Amino acid sequence: MSPHAFSTEEINGVYRAIRERRDVRHFKPGAISPEQLTRFIAAAHNGPSVGLMQPWRFIRIVNPELRSNIHHHVDQERILTAEALGKRADEFMQLKVEGILSCAEVLVVGLIDHRENFIFGRRTMPEMDLASAACAIQNFWLAARAEGIGVGWVSLFDPQHMRDLCAMPEGSKPIAVLCVGHVDEFYPAPMLEIENWDKRRALSEIMFEDSWENSVKT
Image 1 (cartoon, rainbow, N blue to C red):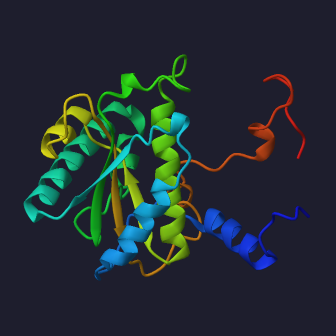
Image 2 (cartoon, helix red, strand yellow):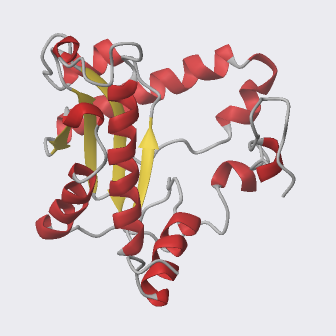
């Protein structure tokens, strides 16, 4: 074992958080302390960042009317998504896709404006700002799971409309609405797997050696 490795107990804790992280939609009443929320955001802010550009910004939604407006917009997008799904529309409408009104905290995560000024690591792949922010959200998610707090990532919204709702500057881009709160339990498996929407693929389907056609036997 590497001399830089954590203890066995610590390693098991990291892998458990990864394995038991869930995209949560069902919340129970109860506030989250400001200190706890700050810890989760600090974990996100420690995420890897291409060129150290730190493109993430977190907007805590405290105005009840704004939260209600965000929920209304997401619900409208839910209906439009169902229409776009065609044959799976009815199946989709049976799914619970957000918990905006029932969770303790709602955060809107956005990418900064003037991102074109950051070239390091983005000259040929400008989308790496989004990749960096996604890593930050994953850090938030894992920290919350380790402390027994549920998080749900909602992406059913029009970025321009969400930007206007949250008075974000021109050129910035909202990428997530995070629902954060206490739960009665964590789903034993991803909710969409439980609902038979899809299932997690085997490692042999996503691992290759040297070429896309040469899958790795696991």
